[in-house]
Length: 183
Image (cartoon, rainbow, N blue to C red):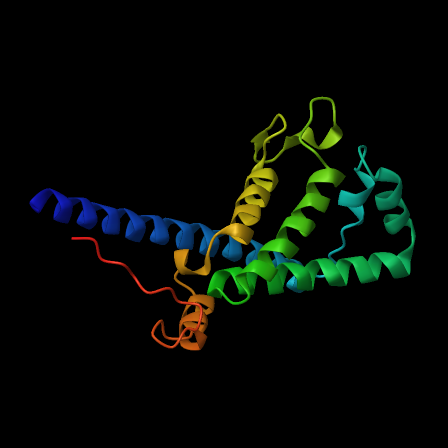
């Protein structure tokens, strides 16, 4: 009996630690995106034109067209800034986590496609170091993709609290199957 109790305690501890780690990663990615959006919002005359013009991979013609069309560039910058802020807020607080994660994957995928960390590309040597294929954009994108599929109960978040408030109690659930006890 003692062995079973210890197994359950260690399993519970594992899930608690895992939940804290996932929540921490979600909050850190949310903070990063929120900070990037706010810093762009308050930077005088910030624009993504330089980043878009550096594009030399997939969709580079599309990114160059955005950069060369002033009205489209303004719209793109507005969506970029407020996308970062809203995605960051959603992830930081755990509000609409799945929606924020899907939007974050899409936005970061555009960043990655615009300037991938491949050898020979102009953007390969960044102020953060040198990367080959894997950079922070790819890592954050993969984590956000994971968050799309992780059950809400695996995060400490507002989503989790809300889902628990709206959940049907198990004794009232019409699809609940009675447990069978085999002694």
